[in-house]
Amino acid sequence: MYDTSEMEEYLSANLMTPKRQLVKAESGLRREFLLDSQQLKLIRAVYEQSPQTFDDATKAAVDIARVVR
Image (tube, rainbow, N blue to C red; front, side):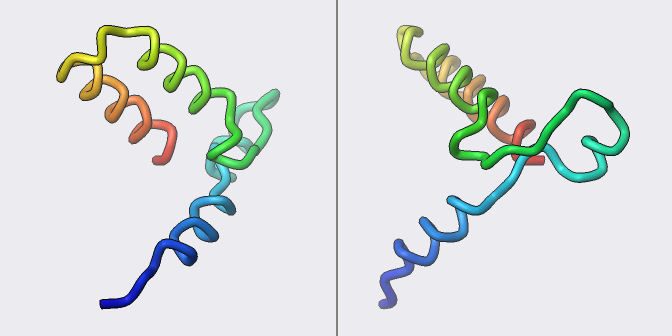
């Protein structure tokens, strides 16, 4: 079995959000690294302050999926 954690960390550290098409379409948007993005930080803060139920985890996952898309 291969240890891919270093490669996964490298790849995730270089992901950008939002996509270029959105930045071109909407003035005022700027790209930033996904892991340092304000959107991801907000999702994390909301989740950490919640009771962390299954519904809270599901909502956080859906919100993250929207950011990544």
